[in-house]
Image (cartoon, rainbow, N blue to C red):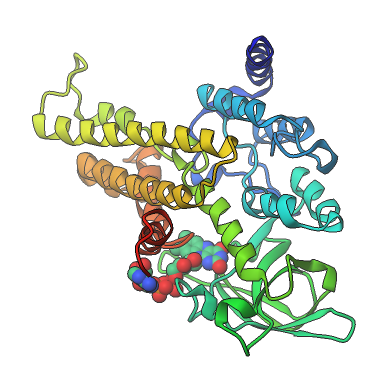
Length: 395
Ligand SMILES: Cc1cc2nc3c(=O)[nH]c(=O)nc-3n(C[C@H](O)[C@H](O)[C@H](O)COP(=O)(O)OP(=O)(O)OC[C@H]3O[C@@H](n4cnc5c(N)ncnc54)[C@H](O)[C@@H]3O)c2cc1C
């Protein structure tokens, strides 16, 4: 107990001494630092915070030191998370590799795969994208058609295409699902491959959205050679690997309100628009709506805390990961809907000096929040999983 409290104190002191003040302000979408070969810092504080956390191994505090992690026990890693939250420290690096692929490689990767891929993630040198969805394989992911032929030496040759690949144009590597057997039940003929985006035959096309901007890409594979050692898990065992990975994706998405994504404190925003000079919210309808949102959010964070503790105790949290993803993302949507209502016309501010930067951000996040209930498996799909795996209802 004493050691743990000492560790907490050391952690807090270290964070206070090393996290620049600007890196303790709420993060906006434009301020996210994505790791990878194209890493870009908008200012010196971002670079300092990234490098300090990297050198400490705290991009992933609980990963073993030999792979560049912090080597902390789960309880200590949890303390780092808690203290970062208390001091409002930003995530120094956003990287699908660290959140999703890394934990899967730690669990089932070969030693060579761990040695090759984990340290560069921990250095923030490689950025990963996710190649799962295809034009006719989103919710029904197992219907994917991108195909890999197996050569005599065990290498794979990939043909086909992926869609909705977030930041495919900025990624260095992709983890992808490909079909390696057409003759069996669709879930049983899929393999999980790691593909270097610089391989000959990979073409990335950004998808332009109505806003003129987009983080989405289509990725095409034309006779792309992938060495045999980049197969994760057994041949044709990719569905199980993907399910593991999606659990980590859902767990990451259930941490949105803990700084894993830009977000706003509803109460702070409401205070700016609804409270009178004496600090009272007199209007009962708004008070009611706000109180209900805050209560839901508090209840979520307590339940989230419990699920995390269960995870630390090595209990099976695969079902709860879907519940947490569902509730957190639906709550973010509800929160931004409420903020838009209470801000009225000012909520619709996309640009222009007559509105504040915060108002622009809220408008953008309101739009973005609508994607949370689709990406990582839609809310309906989470409900299906919960019905089957948590409640044990028939399919
Ligand atoms: C912001 C964002 C980022 C993304 N990034 C990536 C990425 O990096 N890589 C990647 O591979 N994919 C990515 N995706 C794609 C995402 O995984 C798919 O959009 C998602 O799985 C849904 O698939 P779909 O778009 O084909 O919709 P569909 O599967 O066609 O679903 C359409 C609607 O039908 C509902 N529905 C479908 N099946 C059922 C069912 N069985 N029961 C009840 N309702 C059902 C869905 O809930 C949805 O409302 C991203 C999506 C978004 C929005």
